[in-house]
Image 1: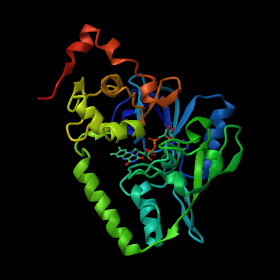
Image 2: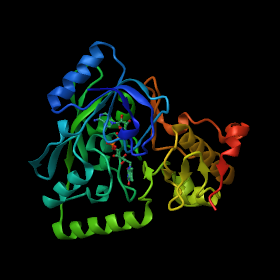
Image 3: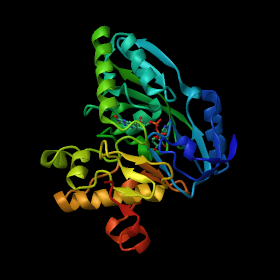
Image 4: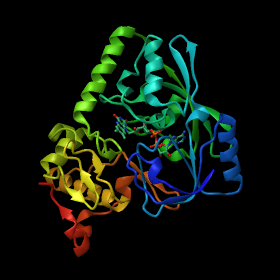
Length: 322
Ligand SMILES: Cc1cc2nc3c(=O)[nH]c(=O)nc-3n(C[C@H](O)[C@H](O)[C@H](O)COP(=O)(O)OP(=O)(O)OC[C@H]3O[C@@H](n4cnc5c(N)ncnc54)[C@H](O)[C@@H]3O)c2cc1C
């Protein structure tokens, strides 16, 4: 247990003030007992994976952050194309294990930097796929302290969303069903996906991947969110230490000293300007943790850029990248 620990080191954005404490359990039992203890004492807490889809607040978090990881990193072939894996398993390792067992359906997730629990909660994926398509059931420590196996039908998977985002349950493990596949062909596909991601996505500056989820109406009108943000003239826009990536406009990068307020301001600006252009208000995939445990999509906390730009101090900090 680390007290008064910086959250910046736990987020891919390297942003965030201190948490009262951070704990990284070493076994599944330790994790379950830790969460049960915190619940029994009514201690505010949040369970996270690798922080690759999380914006921590500049004011930090008045509670305990519990990290999955080695506590839940198992991988087991059940048979008949069914695989069981722990919520702390690193996603690219999970995908490689699935491929090594000549099972197909997970390759799209090869380049996603996060833990399997986070991937399931976020219904993450790429190439317009989500891991929820392959989920059979999810083992959780439920909000009432009971361990349950929840079938896929009860999880309401939709594009980058699932019921697990609001249920308060801790994901411990999940079962997935895959089809038989050609190992060599899948390995080649994985390499091609990784190459294409390396070419498209910013690599030098810290970021949390795509900020906004794709919207079908926006897609039909212009394309993915990155293209819409670019068409709105915002590629490269800076706010404090944060910047809409000059490489890919659906990414916001930390140029070194970004604050969560800077990122939220850019999210607000992008939403407002794309709405002015298209009539569609984009929704954020990235989730913001407030100091008192509120965990919600970042657009729900960022307000309107037009209001923010009325403040002289904020306005001065809007500088276009030349
Ligand atoms: C460079 C980069 C590229 C990315 N590319 C993609 C992509 O192509 N596709 C994609 O979908 N995503 C992408 N992401 C986003 C991110 O990697 C995924 O959403 C990832 O699966 C999140 O996993 P995590 O362990 O980091 O979750 P975190 O960010 O730690 O958490 C995300 C949410 O899940 C909750 N959570 C995490 N673990 C648990 C658990 N065990 N029990 C209950 N709740 C839990 C957290 O509380 C939080 O609400 C990218 C991110 C980066 C930085």
